[in-house]
Image 1 (cartoon, one colour):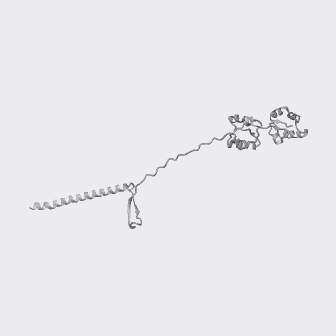
Image 2 (spheres, helix red, strand yellow; image 1 turned 90 degrees about the vertical axis):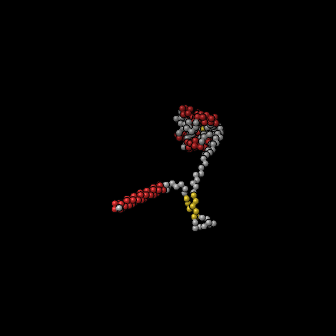
Image 3 (cartoon, one colour; image 1 turned 45 degrees about the vertical axis):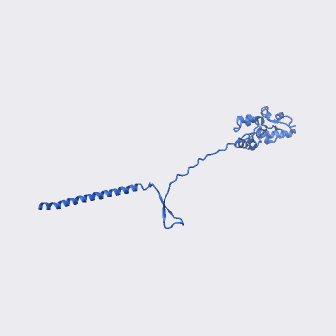
Length: 223
């Protein structure tokens, strides 16, 4: 009997230790599951499945309460394709008529087929004192294409310079005639009361045959 009484305290101690061990294991397991759940929620807090907002009730509802309403995310409206419609350039009407390239206006040059910029280039050349003495001089302008000149050549009308009517400025437009000979031609015309032939220019001092041949097709004399 005494041996059995001595074993009872030892059995109770072992049973208590086992129970305590299970409690510790259960606590640790619960603590582990709690931490795992918290980490899972924290990881998914930026990607909720459903978003809720608080919508205040209208005047017909109780103002002291708020209603949770799920927000349905809608796709942005599709943008309609923008179709750019370009107007076709209207071809400019080209005209053919007789013209003097030394006096034709910018508008007339445009009517003849030149662009505004090309016509302005011709105008600027004339404003700086340039002059087209012959048809081929007009063809030398860099804004006059060969095809354009071929079309306009029959319509180019450059009047001859009348030795009995021209002033010094007009005579200066003749090739090889500078201020000296322009003044001489005018003064000699006054002296002889008018030219009767272009060959009378040879009577002017130092006015030679070569100079006359250079302008013969550009001058005339009126009666």
